Image 1: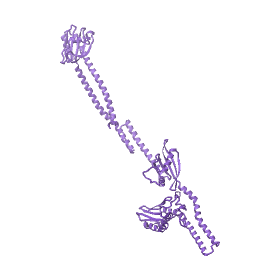
Image 2: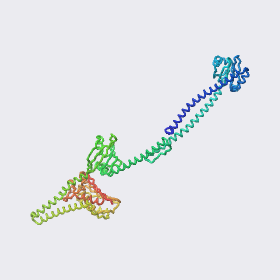
Image 3: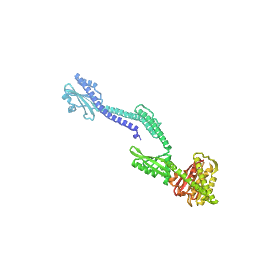
Image 4: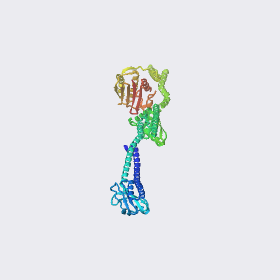
Length: 584
């Protein structure tokens, strides 16, 4: 709006200021010129009266003196002469409205008679007798008893004043018009750089830091434009520095092995890195909650820790277990001066450390346990043969058969350990070949139909094969399928189900083996792919054939040899799901 702009305000201010000054000056000039014209007319008439009185004193002939006096006066005025002997003379005038004065009228006016009584010059504005004409009269004494009066109409003075007033008002009007033009020109010239600076400032708010203000003058506004451009360059420099620092910090946080979460007071997650996102997914799965990408609120366990940090304003260290993984969290308050504005949590996955400790403690015990039974049986049965405890040939053959089976079992254990060691050392060679995924999976499913029916378990399959021809090591992958499906069937109760889902795309071969069996305890989930891992009593095998605890470790190495990944999700008494993804 015009009235709210700097141009309007500055122009109106200049215009009002000049108008006020011109108004005062016009009034003063009008008063001055009004008094000036009156005084000038009176002075001029008084000079004329003085000249006339000198003429009268020089001439004894009254008629001649009047004729000479008429030559001196203004044609529009009249001269009235009163001699000491009472003679009264009056001159003519071109102003027809100017009446003649009478001796009686003059003698009745005390101010005018001061000429006779005190011999002083007199000046007066009055109305002429028998008329409405305003006139100006001046009088001066002549000799001792006479006087000369000169008078003229005030219309002449008023006309002069009117002309002067017109000139003054015209000059004032021209001055106001010029002031208005000058005010707009000046305000526009002053505010034009300011408008450009405002537009540049708006560009800066939009992030256009290359915007420059043109330097039109070298005064204070020009210096302001120079300072504005310098500010823009400094802002660009600092913003770029902040952006680089932010990108650097973001890269550092993203590449950290530890999880980092930044939260505000409301519990909204502002910054997370991949390890932290993995931790949050585990929490959501643990709490049977669906994670919404638009939902930035932290899970309930994090909120509880956050409330503790905000209330106590102290660092909090907690250890949390989710899906069998152990996480250690250090949450520290973030301050805005003295106000706690949020917190930053650093989360470290301590599962591997715990796993290594457990492996170090359990490895010898596991190996000893696996070898103790067959060695004891070999030792016992061999002693029985040596000591002739078995008398008949059939008994000796039976003991020899047991010794053979146990030695075969030990050999199988050693071979699996050697295979696993070679795989972990990277010495495994894959014999990849193109196979039809549909027939490959169908053959494996048929292989386990009998075992499933024997255990009263429903074995189902679901195939979504966009690409049927895949490149894998069939023997090794069949070993993975065999181990996982066999485990699933044997650890599923009667009337349960085992579901094998196979999917293939242009880039991946995905396998999911799901059961609703006894599940894996949460604390054992991180260790299912370790050597000698065996489930608890609820997952022991139902037949006499005992496993070595190396099957899942071998399966994991085979999948990783195919550059794939294998993961497990499980809940006790609800079931277990193994997910395998192999890139094609």
